[in-house]
Image (cartoon, rainbow, N blue to C red; front, top):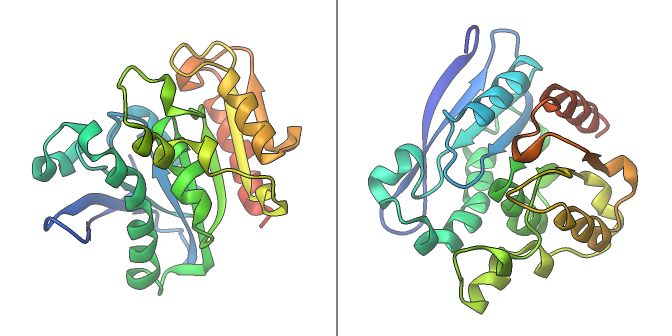
Length: 238
């Protein structure tokens, strides 16, 4: 990532002496105080995955401080936790609160007006529409191709776990939902398009906050720049 300054960070979690491995990205032109946007990848993604990396670069060059971290069982963090992600799925979802705590406590000198944003795809989107949704320190959220209900996965989770990781059990109609943007492609083979309608309906979103594309699949092929431009305008409205 040419012209991007990278600071590697450790975000401690409350149990097991584990640090989430992450990085903060910015440029020489980034203001001394700017919004923080947390990029959340999908299952098996990490901060060096091409999709994640491309949006890190885009938002950093747009003037944000960008934070991306490797979940438990992912990337560098799995050296501490091991790689069996489904045994840690509750912690993977709830760790976002600790990441937000860390930004507020450790990056307060850089954080502009408490503007913390979340941007995530697939499982990252589900983290946003569950634990991110309930954390009102998050000012704006963008969730791409998100699963509505984890009953539908090949891994068969217990009911009590499903209720803690499925947006179905968190979302409700609220005027504050205008702070959320969702997007999905109709030809997504991994997370069917029906999930998009279920989330849109439960949140009560209008078309301006719910982008749909005919093609692009799970990775939004051919629409990534469009997603970024729309996301940037959405964040600037705050």
